[in-house]
Length: 341
View 1 (cartoon, rainbow, N blue to C red):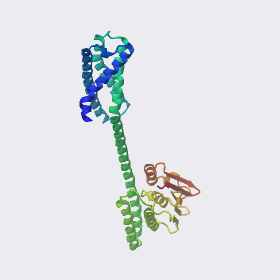
View 2 (cartoon, rainbow, N blue to C red; view 1 turned 30 degrees about the vertical axis):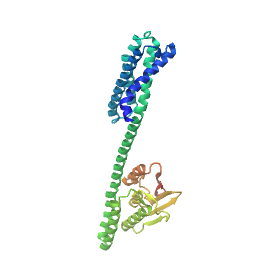
View 3 (cartoon, rainbow, N blue to C red; view 1 turned 60 degrees about the horizontal axis):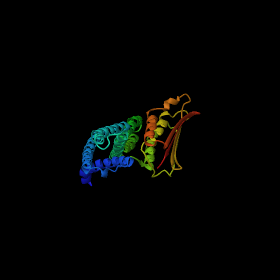
View 4 (cartoon, rainbow, N blue to C red; view 1 turned 90 degrees about the vertical axis):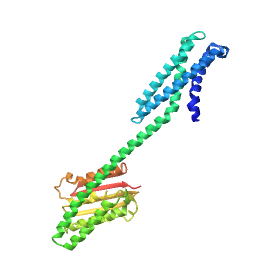
């Protein structure tokens, strides 16, 4: 098959154009070309074969030139440029070879002959272009889309790593404060806090999975809550409930921490914190409510933790999650819903 495309296609293509033109002209004039001198027919067919070689060679070279542009960009402008050059090459070849042949043979060149000679090769070359270039253009478009998606994905992964890294110093600052207060009162308790703290850091730093079981995330959250209880006032009224159905479902890590961390940071007033996680219709529903002083502004809760959480949800659970916050009657409420796959 390669041999045909290399050696036979060009002469066959030139003869196909010639015979199509002759067929239309002979049908209109009722003058079959086989009644003409065989030498004249042989001469015209020879010129058509030569035109076929030149035309196919120039078109293929033109396509290779545009392949370099396809490696950079793919769009309708590139296709229009190719089609324009296909038209130019066709008209030049036809009017150098076939138009003079028609003018110097038979009864000369009429307007009808000129129109047919210029239209038929263009139609054939457009068909040739569609067959030869469609696969190349489609492949170039797909490659560009894959490359664009890869770049976008790399940018999102970089942003996710940055957002996740921002939790570490924030959490580290709070945990070190906890240990600092214990050092003056109870060294043994401080050592236990450091041990628990190291376990939390190990989860943050060394867990390389993209998603983790919800049970693992809940255990991490439980350890964090226990560590925070050490530094909070004894009058804190803490209520924690984790639905037992939340077990092996997969979730991206460290999404629940900012809400709990925020509650411990701003709790006041009646010193109440209610933490609840449950499974409803295949969705994780996680809510945190903490009492606050009446005079605390709403914007005090919009720190780096919740802002990062909102951005991570946009990147990881676009269209599958919602985060709402509200302040009312001395309480601050944060509710997170995530559709679990």
